[in-house]
Length: 316
Image (tube, rainbow, N blue to C red; front, side, top):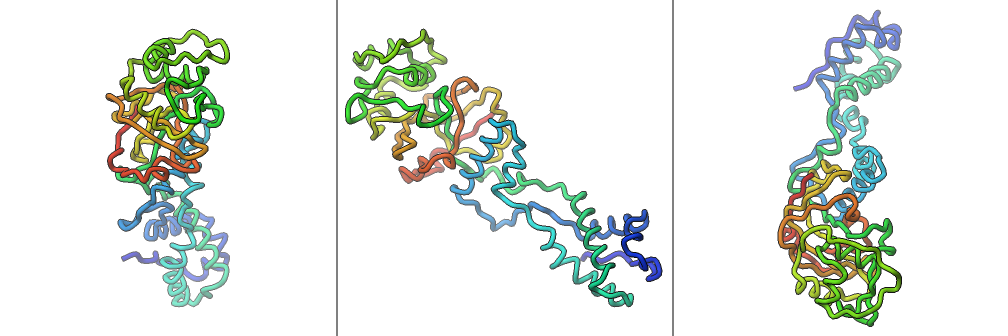
């Protein structure tokens, strides 16, 4: 059980601010902070974060990485720390008031205030907790990687010439060419397999495949035909542990040990996926990460996905 260190003689506390600024006063406050520590972040065993809240946190983490901001500070904006007042009011103050009364010192005067301010400073200096302590390997978020060199979602879409999605009717645009290269196909290979004879609206630069195909053409046609929208983008999808996302360096290649290749309409809320044929490594130039928190409707919202099926690991 915690106990308050013995107070000095009342005469030493005639000027409490001077005493608690002295070496002896600092030592006393340090002992008090050791006896009554404060943790800004701690997790009770009964705490359970919703997928929605973890998606929102993931969005802040990703934005901070891309914008060069401190990730911990970004996370603190989503999960606020426990205020020092709670520990002081419930644990420290009752003991201090009792001791001051026993010593014949007013329990609501300068001495009480000086102890409170000094304890908070020393407790803060000793507190090594961080917002990351709130999350464990069983806390998951929805993570996507969209194959596009455009920053904004509505600039990243591919379109169908028909009122339905059809591989043979997709518009041949730089967005489609870029996505195909990341899926493991060239435009000419896609045209041949899909019988797409649509002329491109603008000259397309020469482009090579960025990797071996991560899905068969039959699977590619399947996710296009089931996109349920005439405008969509191509992406990878997995449900990953928040601690792994926190640790990622997005300026380096990232490997999904397991993932799904999907078509997603982020504006109207449609989604369809197939499993990739193995681990997939993406580089910064291949596209951009986003989380379910960046979308009006995440894949889980759209399709009521059984998220444990999509659990996967990722690493640099």
